[in-house]
Image (cartoon, rainbow, N blue to C red; front, side, top):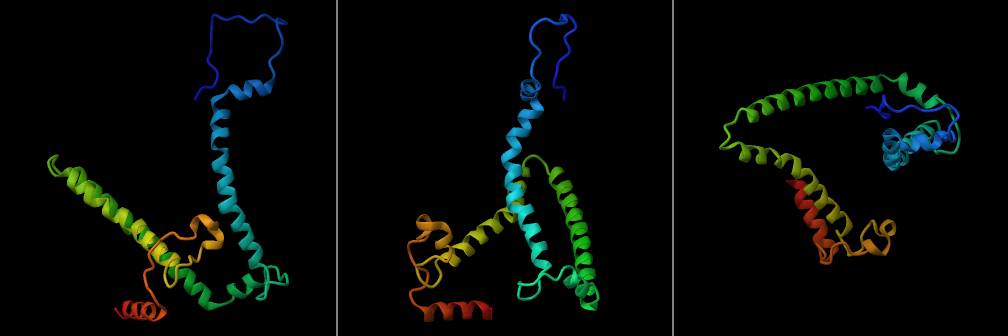
Length: 189
């Protein structure tokens, strides 16, 4: 992308007028405007991703009671254990095979959907959206049960303040006994 356009007919005279400030020139560039527009997102990523990552590294250098700094002693302990390396190996195998098969299945499905005749193509594309829509719907139901499961007090109430005090007006279970019975019946399935 070109920020400054070349104008062959314009001639600038030396010493005529004031020299423009570099800040004013920088603010007129498209790249500067784009950076300023993405700055809130960059700050949000820094707050929600980078800070917790460094905080977790800090916590990893503390002892079990999280009161004394032990440095890399926890990592030395992990790297010497055979179980840790077994878990790392299994995680790598799972990640590599999952990515490979997801990509393979995705390419195959994309090829089939691309080659469907125009008459039924919209139906098949609509049906392919179902696996994309179901997880958010299920997580919504999970949060609904989480905030209004046994009694009408949401568990997230202190975080949400008064605005989230009653996210759902009707209780799911009226007493603790029916709640435990329902959870037990669902876990037995």
